[in-house]
Image (cartoon, each protein chain N blue to C red):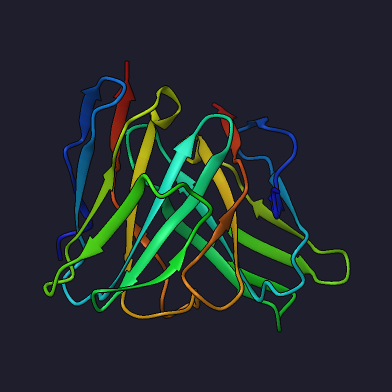
Length: 111
Length: 116
């Protein structure tokens, strides 16, 4: 069963606007969450992460929000740039290197 | 610092054959994990090796196996290939255990397997 779910497989956004990606999880044992970005013909690249003891983590244009009670996290990209066009994966860990991934969101930033 | 290197990048096999994929982790990284990526299932965990020992295993049949050598390089093998094994196989390395900020998985570019 899919423990990490990413709905809305694709998202198109104008350059300069905000991109919001959502992720839901079912396993309450998850205590660390990560976002990876993937370009075609490349492996996923780590973007940003958040521990379950926090509700927000910010790194430049990228901010991840965690709502533990709702088992929901989101990634905000502000402002969106054409180079952000990629597939974004949400992943979760229960303390080991066995990550559970969502199926990914395709983001297209329109110049 | 060299990244995670996977070979071969692309390969084509026929049903019933077997395949071996190789992964060289980042220097100093002792943990190597393998994931299968397919369009329908996304990334699914296969197994993880740490110091030559399998520490975690995903829900894949016994046809999927792996090993890790003393230099942390890892191989995975798939025997009796099926059409559904066509996928991108990704290797990731990390310094230790636990997905924390200090131990983020770094992925290779993957090995694209096509089974005909």
